[in-house]
Length: 114
Length: 117
Image (cartoon, rainbow over all chains, first blue to last red):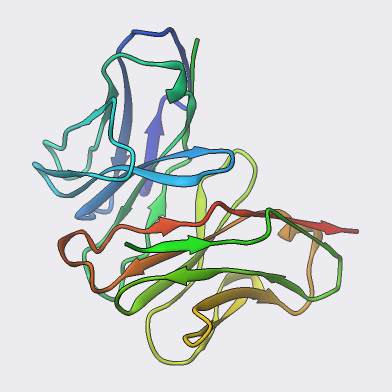
């Protein structure tokens, strides 16, 4: 099906473990984004990508790594998970046109770090 | 730097009454403004956006928003609330003058709307 998907939807891990959250979109959108959603903070941008092999930091990048070898995929890796990274993570994508820049969001991944 | 404020954590309204969810913004250039809605355990869904033109923007599900440049506000409104409108609403801004990173959206903290039957 067309759209933006995230996997896994739920993940429980332990402090210090590496975790990778997957994001896949079928629209061939140029821009992709990773946000985390926490109570009292709304959505905060972690990383974004303007195209394959082009990534940049957002508001809260520490402790996260991203890559984008293919336009349709934008995985987010927590290299050594900490409890403060317990959150709901959303991936989003958008076209790069000035007038059609609505971001479309995936369903989210709820991550718990014990 | 761009920022968004949603001054109310929660708004309660009776079914059938008009509703307003408030949003104010701060940008250095011209703003693109968005409203998104999030239902429980779901991702964000686009409702409407202001780019340029008419200050009153109409969106999905009967929602509309009024852009007020002098008050730097973009309040979300609906003439008659439905119980099914109960959700978390986010205002977001994109600064058109912020260059290469201008596709970044800055979100408010969200307002929980409860429509009471």
